[in-house]
Image (tube, rainbow, N blue to C red; front, side, top):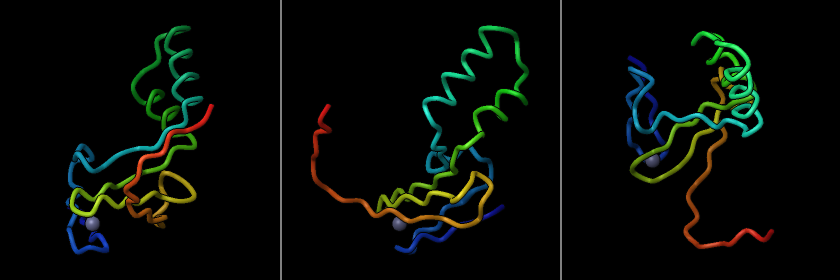
Length: 94
Ligand SMILES: [Zn+2]
């Protein structure tokens, strides 16, 4: 069982890959192209995950301090960019 200690001290237990704080950052284009592949032909779950994993990032979200740890440069990387929560509302202009 792997663990990851957040900078705030909270310990994230990463045993199943299905914990609520174990996330993925996936490009919309990856989701769209994978959906198109599914519509064209039946792909098995291995191909599905390979396509989703392409150019995606592994993200850990600390439930205590809300920091995000984003693997870089790739999903399998053991190096993480750390993002600290900034509380303010901002409307994206279109
Ligand atoms: Zn934390």
